[in-house]
Length: 277
View (cartoon, helix red, strand yellow):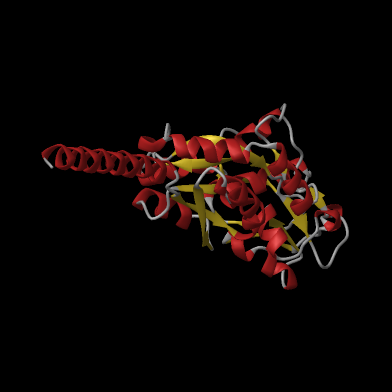
């Protein structure tokens, strides 16, 4: 009887140990399969590209949640406050200027695209048709405004004072064309076309407004100097080596993403992670 009882106790202990080992094994599997949610701040039409990236990242148990903003300061404010984990909408020049102006240290962790500015009009067919008194709207944030003014200088409409890092309309040295410059929030430039003669519009804003680059009356030229206009994925400085965020960058810098960019933007936006300037 004692021998049988001993066998029963030994068997019970063995089963219990087996259950503990199994439970521990299931716990590791569960932990390994745990999904990580990453909030990414974007502006406008970029969700068309990011939705494809998000589908691929799902297979790596990374859930990308897109947070849309309507003006160019909001995504950096949200990133600095920790309301989003990453953002992807700005070029490196804009980010550097924003950090300087707000005493922050948001950090680029990967290049994405370069998106030339374009000039659109409902009233004229060529930028050379701009005459004295014609209103041209342009983005009013420091870097994109400077970029837009440099575009107008390249087009031969104005000249700018030398040595000014972020020129404004006050830094126009000559204006032989006689155009009137009207800075607006970047998101409003496309809407201004019903009133203004022409508008200088960022690519995402143009796409949201159904403006085709095929109809642009002038497009910014990409040169070696354009490297500062490459867009980036940005994070807080403390997260620059975050392994999950690096996987997101890798998923963006992918041939599949390049195809989606090409199909979505019809040549108005160019993959820049391997671009040779």
